Image 1: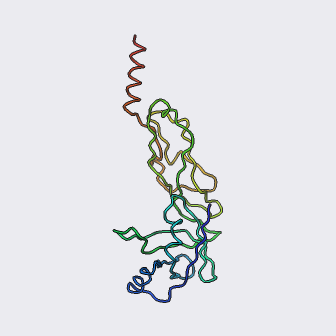
Image 2: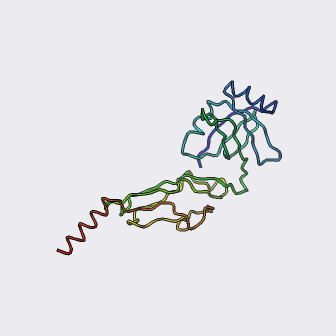
Length: 195
């Protein structure tokens, strides 16, 4: 899995008033869970841009005043109007413990159903998985080449080495549906056979 390097500082104070003061300086409060104790930190907003505004998922290497933490970004709270980040929650990961994280789906190939006018529908853009950090992939590749119109791939159809998918097995991930153009082509072909 890709990694992202990020620097932060320990927060000297807590509370809403202090959080508002540092946000005015474009510094975002954050917390690291999962260690022996929670660590309250602050991070420069500009440093977060490539972490927050991307479809990719990263293991974050946080350097907090010389102490290093390997984390995943668990949650981000955004301002309802400006959409600026207000607070971040990180979970510390350990090499010997499974991590639960949502990994992006990457579609490969061109479905047979699409070639004859069907439309590919990606229902889930990310899948929730559990694995040791060393086994986490950057993306979950799904080959749709054999999908015909009306067919779909379910979570239960997918299998990745050393990775457990936590979404329900009956959930549709991607499918090919009939379009008006494909329906018209099918009707025209059926009428041509009758003649």
